[in-house]
Length: 155
Image (cartoon, rainbow, N blue to C red; front, top):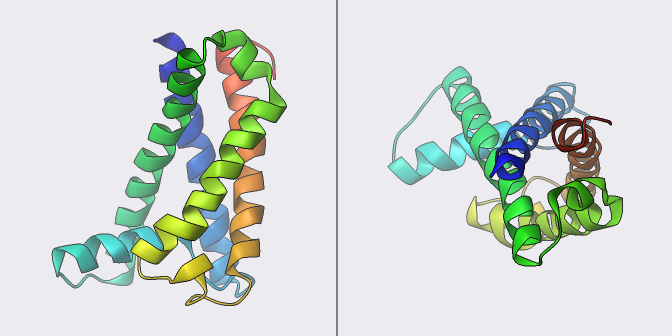
């Protein structure tokens, strides 16, 4: 249970960093979209409500924090089902990389289309898939550092 909590906290922290970087690069017009805005816009569109940019961004940040935390926790639930010890799971760059690679593909083929961004996020731009790849690499780096500190006591 401790590893699942560590996974949640690590995922939430890495997800917030990922989301803030996405939003900052979008504001600087380097990225064509912001994960935070996508999450917030989808939330209000689903409710059939209108919201201002600040409310959309704030709501999207909270949504991104929760979903990233849940995905961080699911990693340790999945590795427990596979009978991989938490310390081993937290130390495996390849296993964490595979998991985050699956999350990236899920984002491109499921989450972005459901959120209204189209297949591979093309509605945001033709390079959205690459932006998502960079963001998931950022998530990987911070998730690994934080989860290794949480579970193993070393980065």
